[in-house]
Image 1 (cartoon, rainbow, N blue to C red):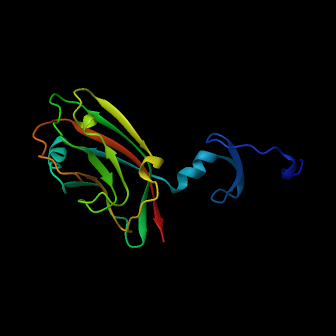
Image 2: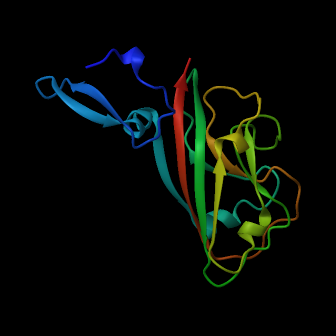
Image 3: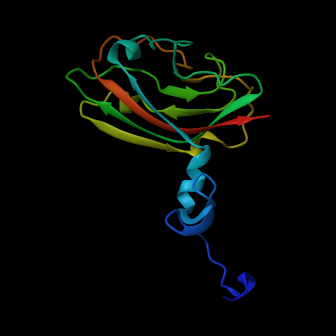
Length: 176
């Protein structure tokens, strides 16, 4: 076998294989995918927000907790999220956007991403996604904050709607 330094460098992808030792199985040599290593530190939360819960987020300062605060000196870092509005029969009438945020429920400071009211007001099943770069520019946040679905702008409230939303949130907990 040639020296490793003589091999060509390349950019790995998730399906590429790495060689390693399985310490839980007599130290046998195994292949691992790059993606399996990346997933070691990742958590996926499947969360349904019901129509009754969505109707409670109707004016500035109203919130719904998606992920609980992680504890002292810990931050939630969202890698991505996907969602689907499961349209039932009556669209919502949100006048303003909602936010997924890691900050005070009445503030546009800190880490947040805007979910356009048009998504909530659809009259058909609608899918959406948010990437890490949409959450994080350089934004300041405090440790031990929950991830919330919030109304951060003033509006008169939502009066109708009967669809649920399913979120799949991919995140990490970083401890300092």
